[in-house]
Length: 295
Image 1 (cartoon, rainbow, N blue to C red):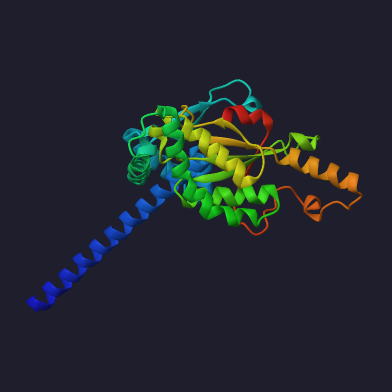
Image 2 (cartoon, rainbow, N blue to C red):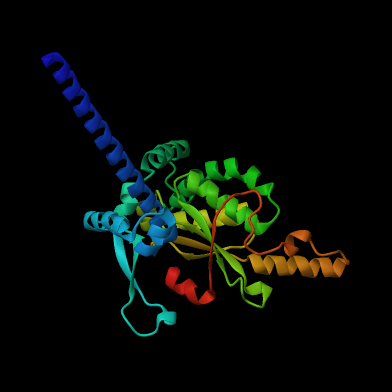
């Protein structure tokens, strides 16, 4: 009898331990999903996070409060013109400490720096800026070489930008896209923002902004269009944002077809501007009025 009781007690304790482990795993999973959404969609409210994660706002705030105390996320007060007078609403963005927690790709960068310096064989005639540019080119060359063929196979610029965002996310840059001005009557005013919620080399880019310049040049080549950098984390923003002139490119294509007498491309007559065939990547639509606040 004693033996059976001891066995039953041991099983009960093991079951309790398993349930505690599952609870901790669920909490950690929710925390990671909260961080991911803050990175991708910040500034974002606790209520919006709750809706996206299908959990209560109170549960989200518990995670946000803990991460705020740890310095992983920070609160940004956002005023909405549609709300009129009143208190600004609380929105959450990833902090610099949070960026550090997400990881920094210094090991690969350091190894490539040593290789580059060794290849120069003691060349002293190169300036520091030239050296940083060369190092940045080496750092981004692998990404461009690997992803270039996939991107060149996608004809539509919007779809190509979405695919690039997904490829950047796979490399730890938390890439996503936003639509801007899609309700503007002028086609040329419509654009896509390529955003990066995390920068694995932010601290190096702060000291050497040429890394951001080289990355922007690479993005332009991969998308095969002139792009413009609106903000960088190295410059103090919570997200890196690159302007992609989708509307301007489509307008130029339409004008070219009119001159040649060709029929309009069926891709430009899609059912809606937000359909994303093939690439499976979410887009966020914002108006020009919101652009300054979100960038």
